[in-house]
Image 1 (cartoon, chains in turn green, cyan):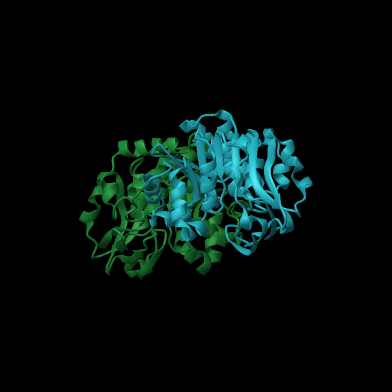
Image 2 (cartoon, one colour):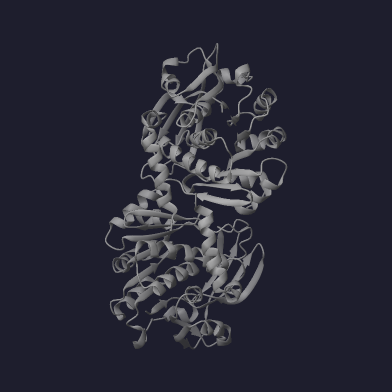
Length: 300
Length: 300
């Protein structure tokens, strides 16, 4: 089994009610692979600038994240800045400097083309299509996207969606994609168009819904008194989810359910501190413990 | 075991995306007792006007709801009008005519004073206090309230809260009561002040949280493609919840959890049609079936 992720590698500047961080490690590809690395090796394809400090990602290499597909281009690394409100579900983007990411054309190294499991992180759907054209019949392709692409590049996005097996979106995006105010109807409608029949709907503090085989599975967000920095929660979720599936190497209903719980568990650790601080210190034992505690949160 | 509810009896005029109803049966005490009647007999204390058509509540009497405490005063019955948006979580109140409810002074009939389980539906906290003064050491008092009383009669409400065992509020009200944006911190804070250590937080389409013995239990809302009329969902939830507890006659943690699921199940039926239309047709078998389906919605 092999797992491939294509996405962004970034320096994030974040302000939250608990403090600030400047130019800390971020990006969808890195959050995804840090989370997935608790289950399986991960191959990353992305781009950084010549300013990128490779020593910052040595912890990922130690965890089995292969960064041979991380291209270094002259120029600066992608930078994003955001400010979270007191209600952490609300945030303002302060700046987005694409830098070397602006001309990124994902080139999948030959040895990654036969990846079994692929995660297309939230990037321009045209780049996602380019990735799909280069890879060789994977067992499962999971797609993440956002409202920016839904309104800006809908046609291309719909093309990408057709070739994916699982789509991860949030509740607002589900409503937007289907023009349905009732989330449950929206989910059914989204699953009825050409494309993935399995959907994951992220609802932030309200948890997530897995829709698979026309059945719903609900998982709450782990109850945290203090979410320090929500950046990377969605990508960590995806990493825990697909990492677990890759390790189990099957996509049966109960594997998907457990994968959603592992995704929620690892994401809940991500937000406990800034950047990768908590994920770097996290152990497999802690992750398994939190997985188990989800049983107690929902069983009756 | 006996169960007492004190609350409103009303005629509701509602507009939803699925249609309109004029002067249909409503009110917290009736929704509560209709739901609780699937588990146990219920005693109702409330007031109606001389215009009230008693034939409309014969279905409740058949189900074991005792309405000897429903006083008839000269004047009109309480009327409420509301319009739900396409997103049913949003509604506008079109009118509120208190009518005979304006001078309501709940008088608990002697035979109800030894009630084991008591539900103080969402009415003026001064009236809730009057009820507490008349009853005789019940096993459990469950309190419902709303933002209107939190901002308008906070002192009196805090007095009522002190004497209750379980408080039911929604997520916004929890934040408002504690001035905490993080819901989980807000729940802990609310449970730390004098008053109930057991809380139920209703989150509408996102389900509910039970906080008991410093542990969280999450239940999703039953996934419905079409919620026709949300009126009465909260009171039906409370009725299913407390009705089940009364039948079991214990307040152990797992009883409370199952009670929350039964509350969610019966509320999900309430919203499937206008007014009491669905509850009137509902069978115990259907209710048990939906209870069981909640296991499938959350198990992994």
